[in-house]
Image 1 (cartoon, rainbow, N blue to C red):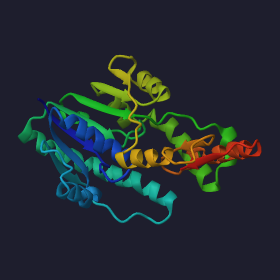
Image 2 (cartoon, rainbow, N blue to C red):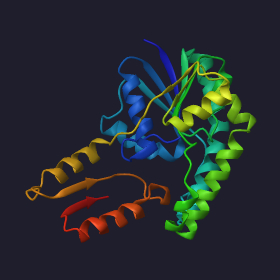
Image 3 (cartoon, one colour):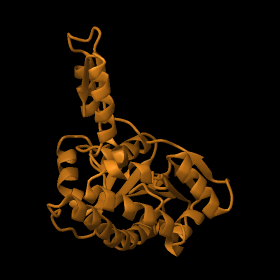
Amino acid sequence: MMKILISAVTCSPYHGSETYFGWSAVKCLAQDHQICVITSDRSRSEIDRAYAEGLVPPSVRFFFAGKFKPWHPNRMLARIQSWKDYIGFTKDSLRIASELHAVEKFDVVHHITYSTVRVPSPMWQLGIPFVFGPVAGNEPFPFRLFPILSPVGAAFELARKTSNVVARFSPNVRRSIRRADHVFAITKESEQLIKTIRGSAQGVSQLSPGFYSPVRVAEFNRFVAGKDTNGVLRLYVAGNLGGQKCVAIALQALARVKKQGVDFRYLL
């Protein structure tokens, strides 16, 4: 059994996407190891709720870092706000991690969320084995698909593209990837970028964290268990509704399917 310190700015059993990635990783590792988790103070009320509902394994302890304001009502500005919040979190989390390590003497530190190569982790500075990821972030959004996006969506994807180029030259990003003892990449594109920055394929492997939470699995089971399944094409997707998810393309495809007389149910 090892003592593992986990850095996860977002971690909760009550949401999907990266928030649930963080939570699931903690639960998996807690089956065999003692875990300390540093997460954002924004998650404090939900972690307290998880404790009250008996969801937190006995081998897990949570610590909170950063100071956060309520989310901006504009989604675009809220997304920008999340990155600014993360910068504050990383500074505070490294302080807390150093204080904890002085007492606990961790065997390894693992940064889980945010899971993108564009966002460096300072946890390598603890001087113990450092695991980074799974991370993505180098996936290109084709310019030919920009017309399907709203002006806000197009602006965000353009900013993402620019960030992908700039990030690979960032000293902090390069140090985070190079100093990691192992980096998990979610996609082939991010894996290739990580290998390029490290100058080697050693210590790099591919691991996808993509899965649905128990709530979504139950929802899916109800969806496919309907009585009108005979001859009906049923499509299910769950995720953050952003332009890069290309739901608009799916709707265009389904319009063609409908014209051809195919009955379907599409649950987003």
